[in-house]
Image (tube, rainbow, N blue to C red):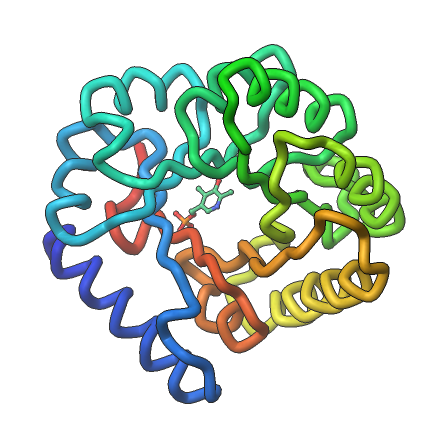
Amino acid sequence: MSSIKENFDRINKQIIDTAVSCGRKPDTIQLIAVSKRKSAETIMEGIKAGAKHLGENYIQEAIEKIDIIGKKSASWHFIGHLQSNKAKFAVNYFEYIHTVDTLKLAKEINKQAKKIKKIQKIFLQVNISEEETKSGTGIKEAIELIRQISVFENLSLQGLMCMPPYFSDPEQARIYFKQLGQIKEKIMAHNFDNISMTHLSMGMSNDFKVAIEEGSTMVRVGTSIFGRRD
Ligand SMILES: *Cc1c(COP(=O)(O)O)cnc(C)c1O
């Protein structure tokens, strides 16, 4: 089994190679190491290996680990489903929240951020494959939701996030990544006040190369860095 350091270096190299081969600047792509269900000890190994961005999915689990590791030891990204009643914790612990998909949640995050005088960086999660069981706003609703979010003073919308269905052949995910980029362009064309989205949060262990080819600026890679989850 290869070490976390070897995995991290390999993924970083693949990101750079993929960027170069499609004519993008490698430093426009950030690697988020996804550490859900991994111990604080394992995460610290990741940080030692060079991970600067870490992704977590479950609030309670994340808080326990971040309290051990330190909020300042990395840039923390919340990438799991977030319930409004947990928004307070997400705001307190995470620099980025990738999974905003309702007005209710955006409102609550804004309220909690205001309390601690923070401008919370968020992503709008889009249900790009329009599967009923998945989180994310519908494609049609995305623009209206952004119009509503644009008035919240303590939110800073960074961009869009998606999670296409799993395909063993990552080429099949390409259409969804492409679509998310098109939705972003469409939103930018509206020129909403206070909205200057720059990021596309897309691509996981299995499909991050295709995501980069389609414009991803933040790839979220877990298994290929930290190994399989129990
Ligand atoms: C778990 C998870 C990832 C990482 O998935 P891997 O296949 O382990 O790389 C990325 N994004 C989200 C939203 C996740 O829940």
